[in-house]
Amino acid sequence: MELILNYFPNLTKTQIQQFKALENLYQDWNLKINVVSRKDIEELYLRHVLHSLGIAKVIQFKPGTRIMDVGTGGGFPGIPLAIMFPECRFHLVDSIGKKLKVVDEVVAGLGLENVKTTHTRVEEIDETYDFIVSRAVAAMPTFVRWIKGKVAKTQTNDLKNGILYLKGGDLSEELQDYRAATLYELSSFFSEPFFETKKVVHLPIKFKG
Ligand SMILES: C[S@@+](CC[C@H](N)C(=O)[O-])C[C@H]1O[C@@H](n2cnc3c(N)ncnc32)[C@H](O)[C@@H]1O
Figure 1 (tube, rainbow, N blue to C red):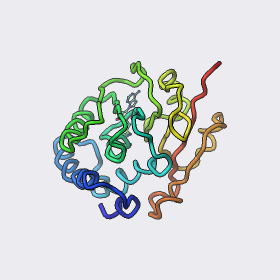
Figure 2 (tube, rainbow, N blue to C red):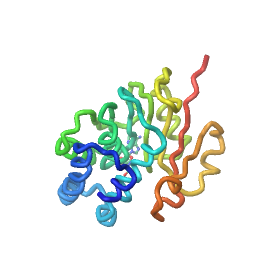
Figure 3 (tube, rainbow, N blue to C red):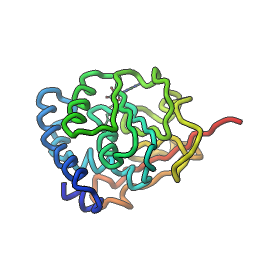
Figure 4 (tube, helix red, strand yellow):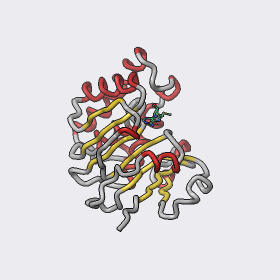
């Protein structure tokens, strides 16, 4: 938890309580339904919470921003972001129901009122969002296909509406067809070796006409 405060010193009391509560909630629920690997649970704050919050170093979502987390799994990056931005609306989607059971329990345990979850493949979603966030779900071309028509046209944030994807390693091949993508190195925000090759990819979605 110190790790989070170190990089986000201006959290409210509620946010601090909620971030602290994550540890017990995930430990308990992970014993019942394994959604996070054991090694990762030991390093929950580094590998999951702080990594998710990399997006909060790239953008401060304005109140009212609508965000979908595609393939949220155990709730990452959606849950840490929902704690960080209580005035934004988060839709966490996954095609595996038991993972969302854990997410629903964590959301209830935290008392988060800005999160809804849906058990479906993202292709079936018929809503629009300002931003679509994700981690470890699909390569960019597939992902872009899945979220077609789901990004709202009107921009209200400093960054253009589109995808904010947490990715690692060399992305030159995967992103070769996406010249509009901007890469933000997480190592410039966080000093832990875990973030050495990790990035937030911002891909604005173009609208025709
Ligand atoms: C490797 S896990 C990543 C989970 C989480 N984002 C994280 O980083 O901890 C990939 C997740 O994507 C989900 N997924 C894969 N394809 C999907 C699709 N088309 N629609 C919704 N969820 C999908 C899987 O069920 C799985 O929970």
